[in-house]
Length: 166
Ligand code: ADP
Image (cartoon, rainbow, N blue to C red):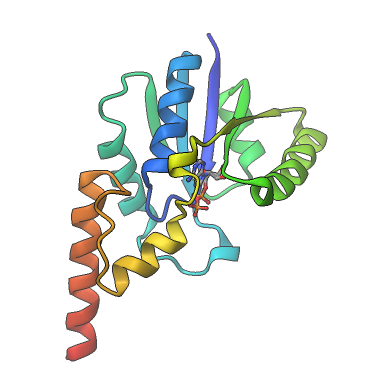
């Protein structure tokens, strides 16, 4: 049985992530999607429990996908889960430079290899950061995220606007 770990911030999960998970789910026996708070990406719009709930809703249709959250190193989680590989999505050359360095470092410290899955070009422009920015300013992101994420984003924007008014 081949198990892979797909880690990310997923704040929030979008259709580019969904595509990578669907591909991994068809290639491997088990995919574990893990959300982490990345200190380099600030506080975030959703907390880890909310991100995990959105991941669960988004992958409910895939029986060999499970979801978790973590606060340790990716390689420690991979070892703990006995994952055979870490899987990462690649949007563009700019992703590759960072991801290659991270993959080499992770291999050096743990022996775990990273496999890259390229994004289909129709999703390669998607990034959680851009989706957050568009949603916060009232733009329509419903074609870029799973339905449950679209409604949670709308709710979060409503809450934030009400807090600002009071
Ligand atoms: P984002 O950059 O959207 O905030 P994450 O940090 O959560 O995403 O990324 C988790 C993983 O998903 C990384 O391997 C990243 O390269 C990949 N990824 C992000 N967006 C896409 C996309 N549009 N297509 C394919 N892979 C993606």
